[in-house]
Image 1 (cartoon, helix red, strand yellow):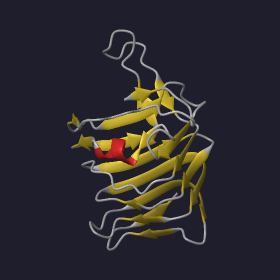
Image 2 (spheres, helix red, strand yellow):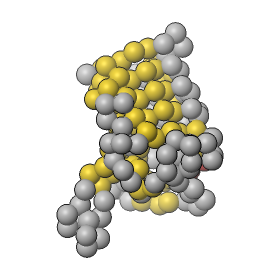
Image 3 (cartoon, one colour):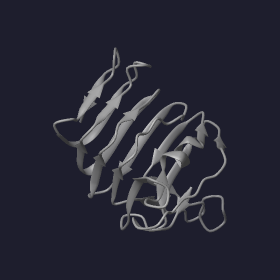
Image 4 (cartoon, helix red, strand yellow):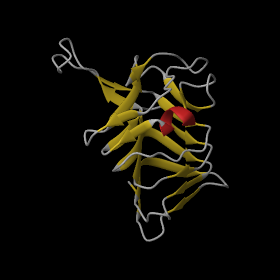
Length: 168
């Protein structure tokens, strides 16, 4: 799914379930590398927690990076898109099947609200991950992988139960 919009206007308004198989769901903005993706209240950000609740997949759910369908809709001259940064201002509990991934460029990823996940979580950016709340996979004992510099605030924590936390 590729949407437009900036941080002052919504880019997505998902009102019904999006069902995907094992290939998963990837979400980005139409001007990759230039726009900052906000996850928060409907109408105040490009993607809301209600939008994410409608994304159902037996594969990965990737937010921040997607590939266009290309000139022919089948991949000819397809372009990869990645947002500059992601700021999460809402509690997230994604229902994706195999993994939940947040991916951004040099602007980094800021997690202001908790993420409770029931699958492996990967957070990747060429910038910094600012962890100001909890990433929790204890209910399912899944792994959390941070592929970036990590800056944990006073309320930032990662809980994995018997899972493993990797910071690369």
